[in-house]
Length: 111
Length: 116
Image (tube, rainbow over all chains, first blue to last red):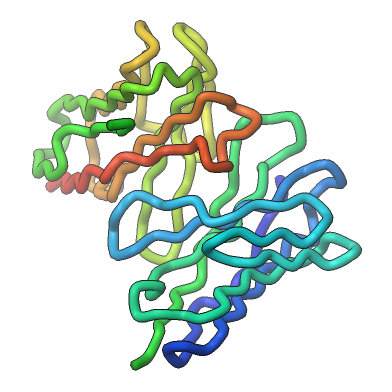
């Protein structure tokens, strides 16, 4: 099965960019990388997803390396409300409906 | 309002007493899934369902059962709960199983289960 590796925790100053890395070296060529976040113990919320090219939406940017073995989620101007656990997610095995969340990165935005 | 509703939100039970956690979605989604979340382990998939009467095991199915008799409901059944099933449980749904993790994926608010 595919696997993701993320740092356990990170701090970021309010107003600065938060860069959250993820290693997914076992991902197959046609599988997306997804990012979700979880605030406190609420249900996870979608942030962004991508395949090969960099992606940007109103919440964040996603930078995927050319070899697709890693990616970085960028929150351009972090606010206190961005304090959460961020999950990098991939499909367990190509062609299945099983997804691997991993343990996530606990981001703390500091005032 | 589009939503996934889980009940109960909190439950304390005793070892061996059968229980059911309900999950209902109002979006006519085909794909539904159950996860458990434990400290240090993140979210792990228990079971998922592609459509009515179609279910399959996730990563940690032992000790759990599910059923999908109608599209909107996907209950999680613990026939004989044990303390190691104490966890935070999430139900999720999506209209497209291949696009499960994109903007169409909705998660419930969670059920915190304690088995003593």
